Length: 287
Image 1 (tube, rainbow, N blue to C red):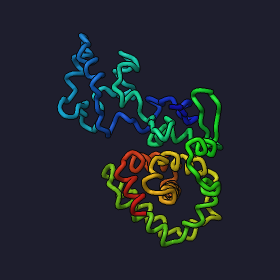
Image 2 (tube, one colour):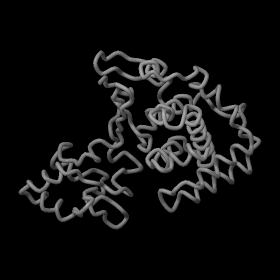
Image 3 (cartoon, rainbow, N blue to C red):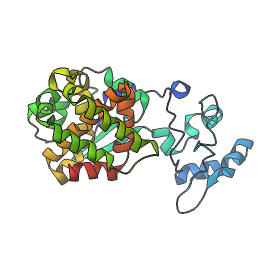
Image 4 (cartoon, one colour):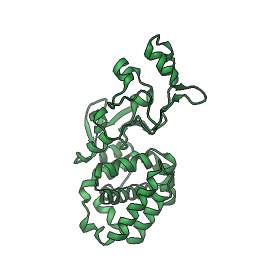
């Protein structure tokens, strides 16, 4: 197997207490068996505290506090377990998040999910989507990666500026927004946010045209969304994955305009869609 990292996988560093959206809140934090055994071996005050805050059963996880916070998330935004045990003291999901790994043909691919504020920031700083062959440390482009994976995509389908104009009819955009509204909501705020995006488009649809959009800003993110779902091409076909990627960009663009925050637009899309396989499949199948 050949290991290939996205460039931002290599560059990613957690913002810790500088992040406005802690990944230690609002998520069930599962604990793998090896880490559970390690916690049970700790004959310390922290070890006892950890065990008191674990639910063991068919699924083993940290008991979240009021406000759905990890019990070891300090008011400073830092992790008590990291402070006392280092990164090696973390369970797999905490140590690896927001990194992800996929296997296609003879290649292992590593990336970073965009639900992380820092990951979204890194993507906006990129002028191209590049990868690194871990064996040779050679940098390769997205197109070169596709060739290695034996995935054939027309060059124009890799460029948002080429594909987006075909999706900007009013009825198509309304259908896209209806699809996002129908996804399984991650929290109570999601439905209201989509309604605000729908309202924005209704009031400003004449402004949402190819001439008024900063397409270049989202070229790399479009390619990254496409990259994340390459393994589903075999199941659903290339056109469905392109549709899904463009729908996502349309929603992100409208979210940004409605809420005036590009980083949050990408991050919020990701935690609602990218991190929910059912929502990904729903958008692909119904779109």
